[in-house]
Image 1 (cartoon, rainbow, N blue to C red):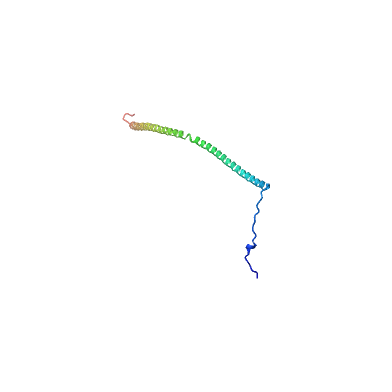
Image 2: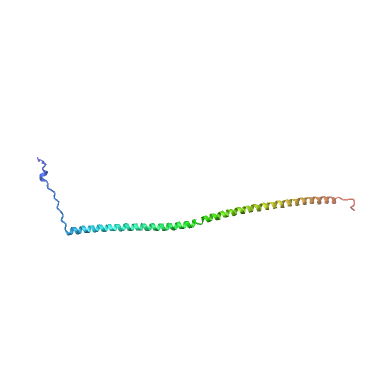
Amino acid sequence: MLEMTNDNADNAMPIVFEKARLNVFNLAGFAIVAMINVAGGAIVWTNLNRDVAEIRDAQQDRATVSDRNFADIRAQIQPIPQLRFQQDQQAVQIAELKAQMAALLERFGTKLDTLNDSVNSVRTEVRVLAQEVRSNAEKKAHPTGFTP
């Protein structure tokens, strides 16, 4: 049979790292990688600055539009106090007109009452006169002794 022995320490191979030697090609490669990283960072930085500038321009445009809209709203709202004053004046004028109309209707009503009373008195007089005419007609309708 095979015997297993633990003699790894005897058979172990030491790991040896080779020290890298710096030469011009390695330095040039590091420089190129560094420049590419710097260029990438510059591109990202430029894109971010452009995005920020676009956002600021959009904010300024929105602010301008909002200011214009607020100015339009203010222009529309500005005559409201004057309209309220005019409305109050018109309410006063309407109240005065109502008072004048009430006075006119009262005078007209009294005139109509007077006219109605006059018409009634004329009607009464006409009835009285009509009654007298009838009674006179009846008296003349009876033959008297002087008729031939």
